[in-house]
Image 1 (cartoon, rainbow, N blue to C red):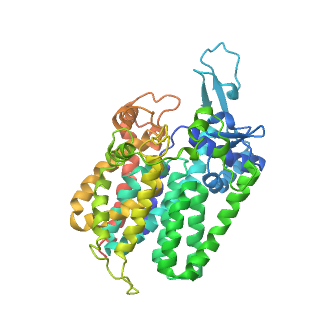
Image 2: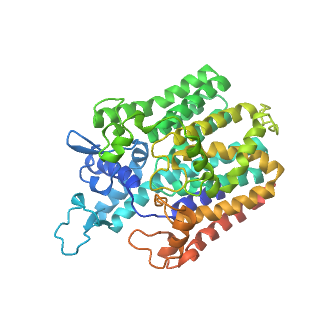
Image 3: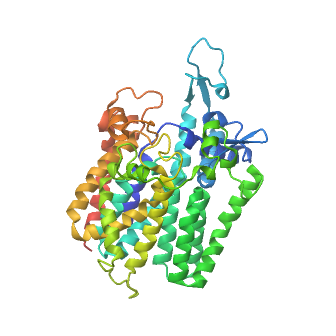
Amino acid sequence: MLLPLAVAVLAATSYFSGPPAWNQNSRLALTRALVEQGTTIIDDYHATTGDKSRRDGHFYSDKAPGASLLAVPAYALYYGASRLVGAEAPDVRLVPLDPRDPNRDPAARRPGDRLAYNQAYRTALYVSRVGSVGVFAVLGAVALYLLALRRLGDRAGALLLTAAYALATPALIYGSAFYGHQLCADLLLLGFAGILLGHGEKYMAFGTGMCLGLAVLCEYPAAVPVALLWLFALLRRGPRFAAVAALGGAPAAVALAVYHTVAFGGPLKTGYDFVYLAEFAEGMRVNYGIHAPDPAVLLELLFGAYRGLFYLAPVLLLAPWGLACELRGWPPGPESRSQETWSVRQIACVCLGVVGFYLALNAGYYMWDGGAAIGPRHCVPMLPFLALALAPAIRVVPRAVVGLALISGAFTLLLAAAAPEAPQFGDPLWGHAWPRIWATDTGYAGPANLGRMLGLPGPLSLVPLLLVLAWCYAQARPHLRA
């Protein structure tokens, strides 16, 4: 049962290979610097991104280092194999607006110029992403399935809930790109699963702490939900479990402090204290750009056609109702094999806390739209906690969940095929993704997926992935009623 699910999620997140962009390039720059030069300085790669910091005459990635660090093993294997066979190294060149312009330095890019990335660069970005974000997307989906199975006591319902999350929400979009948000979501989810499904063993507690520590290493704001989850572990599993979990999170905390000290001069200094571009630095000058939540922005984050979560993933419309039901203790959870009842209210409170934190944070952030993005990308880490609240709807109106999940899945596949960097204007679904999937000439930065590489045009490029997903469902179906 778990194998078809893992194959489906890995196939879906690996199927897409969007064009290089600032956010992803910034993370890859740090990965390359660590592997190729053994340093945190990205001077040789900084021209590929505007998401960078500058300190003492050197450039650094301004992102939390977790995604870059987790991608090191995959990129190191790729880099070593490339050097062994004498393959082309990842590279970028400047294509000036005026072909007669002698300037060919990517770092001296002027308005109208563009960067052209060679295939080795795109492959490096793809390998780094699949080897980090893609791997944890699979682990997160498995963890969510086990949580849903414990909650529902029904394999079919658990599979439906997991598929709705992994394949029909922005979790797929950001699981197909080299960002830290989906990594953070899956690590928080793995930590939550360790608390709920573990039986108090030391190795489980230590692993739970490692996952929670890595979540903060990937995205700084995760420190708040990690504190909430640790408190939940203390109350549910006791002081010993919580102490071992804290010990498990210590290596990530030490790694973060060392990185900050080496790159930015102190354990509490981050790349956001030295942001290079003036417009970003000004926005983050006060409290890193975080202010009181704006109710109008919150409505846009949930229902707007520009960045609205429910607009792009309507299946999640059933989650707030489910969360309200669970806060009242309905429907009660089935008993586990150990006869320990499922604490519906407690878990709902934790989920509400995580969801509420990310919504408030995003609604108060100066760049609440996430720049060039699809959906509320800063809210992506909360998605598995929101998806868990689909359990009541799956029990009461399963057909509605299936119908909305199919619509959401169609939207999500279309958006993933268009890459997550939608323009900072218009409707990302019908104004950005829909025209791009039909385009015959996708351009130098057009959507890329396996179907396109096989020569399949337009929406037909998604057919191979749909066939793989259908095969995975066929493999899982005999086990759903077992």
